Length: 300
Image (tube, rainbow, N blue to C red):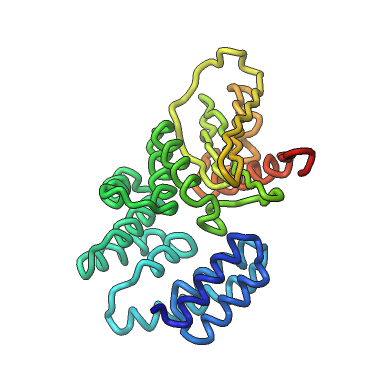
């Protein structure tokens, strides 16, 4: 039987997945009041951040940092949630260090995944892939695990493998994370969205966005078969019981993609880092998602 706080936090995750964010926040607050475990604090913090409530999110993150200081002082190894939090909201290199020590203390699948994600966030994609492959070697059905490996594949330029892992993540749970997987309820239907754009010879990062989530590198293109000025759009629908998946691809040729470069390179230093790429992906995917509308039997 689950502890009361665990069942309440699970209810919070379910409410969040259904778009009932007010109930989800209340559930998390109740669970934290009973037992302020890191996974509850992180879940609530990222939910608040996804809702644009930066101050409330930072309150939870501050508690997580305080807990981590206590853990560090005691000499204990980090748990999975502490590593994921550090990778996403702190210093990825520190997350890698935390992971290496934790793996020696207790190696299990979720810890492998946390290590893969920490390494990916730290820019060590090849090392990350080893951990990501080991995480999924037994065929574990986990949307976050597949999402993390997809991001690793993109960092290595393997678009095909990344697309496959993204597809598996979305098939398992299209609302697996409040920040990494955006979602848009549409009556009884749900749609998820991918956006792909090209990389140019001038260095624009190629992006494949799955629900505003992923940006990574791909092989450079020297010429576009439809012309260097073109912007091409594709939308493919896949029907499932209870939802519709929409794959939206925006293919920018070299000159069109180069014109987009200043919007990605926010600090104008001529290089696109992971944070800039992810931010651009999020903005672009959100804008495209807002343009999608599903109508079934004349009902939206």
